[in-house]
Length: 105
Image 1 (cartoon, rainbow, N blue to C red):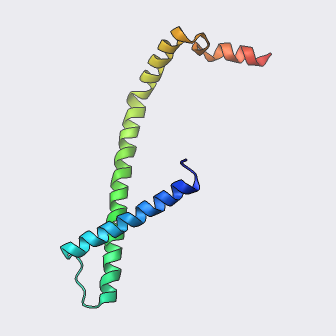
Image 2: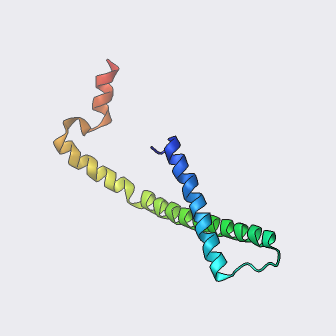
Image 3: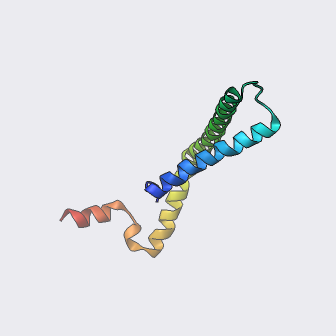
């Protein structure tokens, strides 16, 4: 689903919906001041695009930071704990040495 055409269409439509939403909000607030209607529309679109890019960067940066903190401190401990618990239930989950001996013959 992540790399499918439908997913890409959802991504593009969400991006366009974000620009449309921010354009409407900025139009109501009156952030852009221009006398010419064409210049006003272009500046409004560029302002909405810049705001959407800023929002995307802030969300991505936060997600990246949380992911790095989790992976560097908690992930290894949690995976090893899960492996220990699963090795009591599934006998083949004990180590890779068992599997490598089995597949080498």
